[in-house]
Image (cartoon, rainbow, N blue to C red; front, side):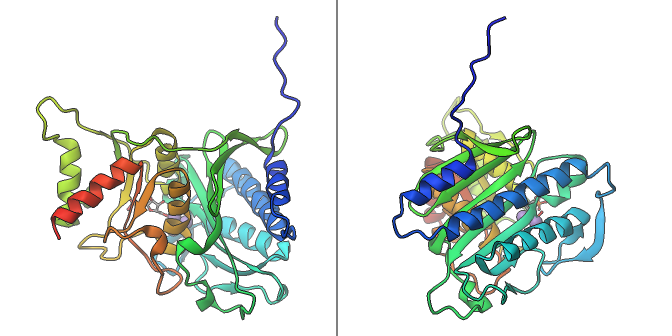
Amino acid sequence: VAQEKINTDIVTLTRFLTEEQSKHREATGDFTLLCHALQFSFKSIAYYIRRASLINLSGLAGSSNSTGDDQKKLDVIGNDIFVAAMRSSGKCRLLVSEEEEECLVFDENPKARYAVVCDPIDGSSNLDAGVSVGTIFGIFRLADNAQGKQEELLLPGSELVASGFTMYGASAQLVITMKGSTVNGFTMDNALGEFILTHPNMKLPKSRAIYSVNEGNSLYWEEPVKKYFDSLKYPAEKGGKPYSARYIGSMVADAYRTLLYGGIFAYPADRKSTKGKLRILYECAPMAMVFENAGGQAVNSRMERMLTVVPEHIHDRSGIFMGSYDEVQKVIDIHKKYQ
Ligand code: AHG
Ligand code: MN
Ligand code: MN
Ligand code: MN
């Protein structure tokens, strides 16, 4: 048998972060250390998700969070892992998590310059069925005179210095982007215990005939949203082909597929959920940054650029449309006709 070609010069996430750091002469290494702590929390959450059915981690925790979701046991454990990793990194001053009512302030690290936002387990309703879920994160750099107050985190996504997510699927996939930079994807190699750069410089296809939305909400959709999805399903031109529908119900998994294959993901605001469902700080903004840096677009239900939306409180929600540049442009254009 022929010998497998062995790559002896692999780019791990650790190496990638070190190389990024060396590009910035003023860098102190704090951001790199924060990312190392993040990376550990992803490995750890991946491990417990894989073992959930074996060690009685499936099902509900019996509590609900501040946005009204019933918490799964793994929502609570994923949150605890994330919080411990951020606290012990020594580089995180403020932490907003979906599972924490208030912003956590780490007074033991008064000099820490970063604020982190996270959805520890996204798609947790899918957990017990073994469907892909994920962790979403965003990192803000606090102002030099920051007091460590929750209001200091009510920032638009355009202020994020980095964001991304990890999807726990057939393998764990980590996607990360930094301000004004490219999007890079890493795959967890369980044998090495490292995330390996497998998807450098990710770019969304400019268009693709796939839409991803919970159509069970269509009764409540506003007119332009109905018209838009109808236009995909019933093309105006004779012989035109309708779009394919794909909806997992885990935003991270739907977003990851959209990033790779193209198309559009939407969770619109509607007459029942007038502010939408997904939360601005730790779901919409980090994803919008990834999509824009990969050449796509992300807007809210008022067709404003998602990254300019400022949350009124830490768990504030928004409608969202994100995906391939041309696909999102179609939604924007249909909405314009209705103004
Ligand atoms: P989370 O599990 O973090 O609370 O997020 C749930 C979100 C998101 O993952 C997904 O896109 C959406 O809820 C699915 O909502 P529906 O079940 O209403 O379609
Ligand atoms: Mn939830
Ligand atoms: Mn979520
Ligand atoms: Mn969640």
